[in-house]
Each structure stands twice: as structure tokens, then as C-alpha cells.
Image (cartoon, rainbow, N blue to C red; front, side, top):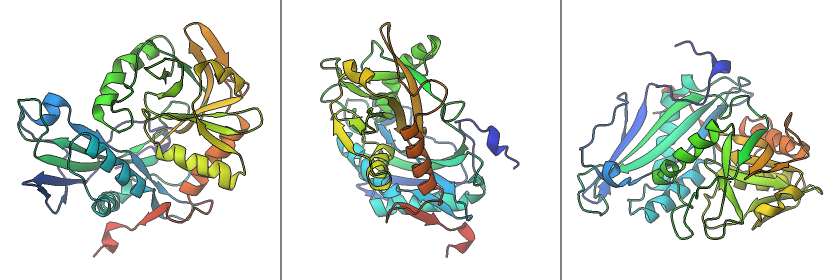
Length: 344
């Protein structure tokens, strides 16, 4: 298949293989690779009736020297375990998770975009209840799957400043599921994002639902701010998703760039004090924010709408440099994946 790597958007493209494992009678089967991209389940399956599902997202990259690597899949495995605990789903073991990721990427290695193309291979592990459920209760049978798809930038235009708005919608309840990667969280955000797009905004910047005064995150990414003296700050909250990209960026800011970092509560009324702002997540990596509109109040960051701020750009260049093999990675961050023919 001929793929125009430079023209890829962030969308699904069917690849050759996916991983499938089933949980029944209290245990997981061995799992296997499949060429069938269709999922067949009962009409009353738990996932269809009560949205019992969670997922993860990560990427594989082709490095400057031609290797194929995956970025910190162990943390995705650990985060999925926490999601499963909260949603009354069986845990898929970390070692089995990482092995499944390696199998799928290895068998689809020709779909890993070339170095320098700006595209990557997106990896989507997910789990859902499969057996018939009528009363409101957890399923007892589940399926774990992984598919991959080559993708381009999450936001069109790549690393170009975007505009956020503070919506009249809540993302997560104080004691709800905002801290886990549950499908239901994203379903609840769909109307809000469509409404934002219809009004000319790129994304929503959610505030806490308890007081509506503190910054949380956007519909699909965590957020970071940079102070005028180059301190990198990210919101602290127990209702936002613990982003692996955000965690990595904070480490990079401190250990690679020598910057001071802090995780704390951030009031929506103080965002005008920052000189830079950016979204961070697996899909977007790091997307600079040029403007936030809060019910008519417009905050324009000094970094502007034309290009990323200085610190945002340095963070982006350093993290992608680590992912692409141009910069030495911290121990344990990079998992190399061999082509399938090399697997015995």
C-alpha cells in the first residue's frame, strides 16, 4: 500500500493485524493476532448497555537511525490497570500488555511512518464488557484488543497555536471517573467539542465542576503553563487524567532544560499571569495555546497566535527528540520493537 505520509490526518486507517484476548470464567486466554478488524458481540453486551469500557493511547516511532520504538508503554499498562479497577473490569497484566503492544507493532511494522515525515503509528489498546447484561451490574466476560493506525498531527497545522474556550459544561464530577481513561468520559465531552468547533474554537478548557474556578484540562489533553520567569506549572486535581506525556514533559523541563516545575491548583482568573500555555497528550504531543476565551473575557498569551512560545518549543523539541532517537532517553523510557520476522 502506498501511503502519503505527509498528508495524513489524525484518523483511522485499517492495518493488517490486531491483538485480541478474551476474559471468561475468571481468567484471560492466551491472546492472539487477528486479521479481522470487526468486533462481534451480543446485542445486550455490557459495553453497549452501560458503557463498561476503557482505553489507552500511545505511539510507535521510527528513529533517525531506522529503529522502531514505543514510548513508555509500561505507564500505559499501569494507567489501564487503574481504569479497570475503577470500572470493575479485570486487570490485564502489565507484562502481557507490553508483549501485546510489541506483537501488534511488529506485525504492522510497514505502517510505521518514516523518520522525518511528521507522522507516527498510533496504538489503541482497549477493553470492554462482552456478555449480555440487563440489570445495572458489571459484565463477567471481557475482550481486550489493540489496533494500530498511522496518523498525522492531532490538530491541523501541526504545532501552531490554537484557541480554547471555557464552556458551560462540566467534564467530571469531584468523586467521579475523570482520573481514569473511561470511554464514558469522552462520550460526555462530544457535544461540548462540537459546540466549541461550531463557535470557532479548537477545544474546551474545563474548570472544576465543584467551584468552577480552577483549571482542569481540555476534552482530550492535559495542560501546562509557563510563568514569566520560565517556571513550568501544571494543574493539580484528582479529577483529571494523569497524562504520561505531561509527566514526561515535566521531567524534561526539570532534568533536561534545568527549569523549575510545579504541580498546583491554578485559578482560571490567574491564567493571564502566564506567558505561555500548551496542551499535552499522546495524540497532540504538545500544542501551543495562543488564546483562551472565558465567557467574553479574552486572554491572549504573550507567545501569540503565530508560533509556539520559546519554552513550549524547547519542550516539544526535546521530548520528540527523545522519542525519535535524536536525544538520549532516560532509562526505561524507550522500548525497541523488532520486525516480526525476527521474532521466534
